[in-house]
Amino acid sequence: MTVTAYTLAVVLNLFCLFLGYRFLFQPASAAAGYGVPADPGGDAGAYLTIKGLRDGTLGLVGLALLAFAGAGAEAWFMLAVALVPLGDTLIVLRNGGTKAVAFGIHFATAVVVLVIAGLLFAV
Image (cartoon, rainbow, N blue to C red; front, side):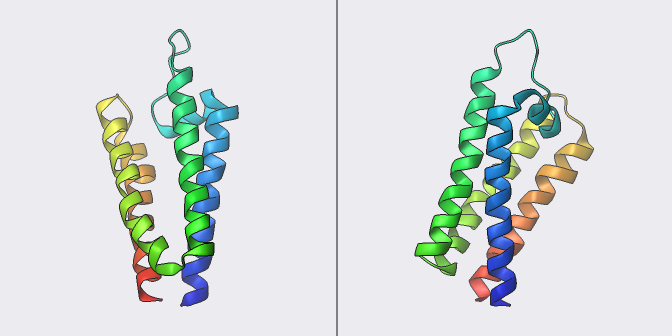
């Protein structure tokens, strides 16, 4: 179970880094995939950059915790970080996104994060 928990945690953290990269370097397509497309005529660039930095930072912190503090610290971190995709679920729903994206991507991500946290707590 230890290998599974660590592998899933690493994959999730790397995915956060990928999302951060995507929001920083491909913001329009990343925003569309998020479920709330950026307004091409608006000034959404700063918000998309913030989201990219947030996601990338969460991935880096997660990897650092796993490498230097261990499974317990990473589990607590993931437990707290699960609030982010739960919040993203509400953001998508409140801003005209579809329920399929809100629940199929963001809420499902929160569940995955919580499952991985549970696995790390069990290690």
